[in-house]
Length: 117
Length: 110
Picture 1: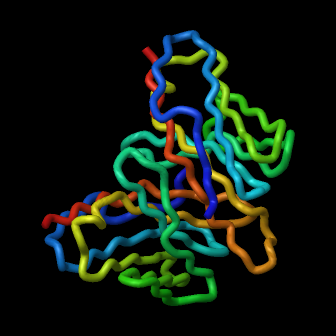
Picture 2: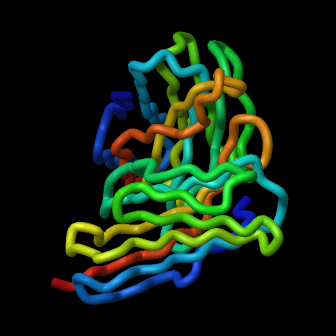
Picture 3: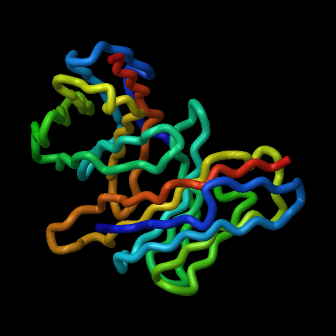
């Protein structure tokens, strides 16, 4: 089974702090994603990576950056945390398409609930 | 950005009843997927239906897809209290990204 782990379940930070959220997957997936989830807004894509050192902006990249130095690890960085970044952050991974008939099902980590005070 | 909506936003039923959730979208799709999320947890993939399929079953789950109406439905039969969760549809329009809807919160009362 695919396993996606996130470094923290709960995190409390102060405004202006630099925050690192780590995500690791163990299935050799090419694609990795960072979403944030807020009530009434569903999941919104922050950044997407399709290979080591490659990244693409999602719908809401402002205030965030990412790093993918190794295939299994995808980090989300809040350079200077703000209160409007308080949210649930979800990491996911998937195979790249085409994938020999396999699908682009995404596998999610348990989420990190970040509170910025 | 979200390109569709789930309907209803919230649903409350008694154990044993069937639950139906709908998903509409605006652009053509390669496939449509349904995910489940228990409170405070990550999403878990339930079922995928390709654009050339009309219906798919998995246990107590039945998914239909009507590409002419740009809509899909998820039916959970004989619901259980453990089915209480939020359910999301996700569309693959092209490439490797999915677009998620806002979800339906299902509560199944024992």
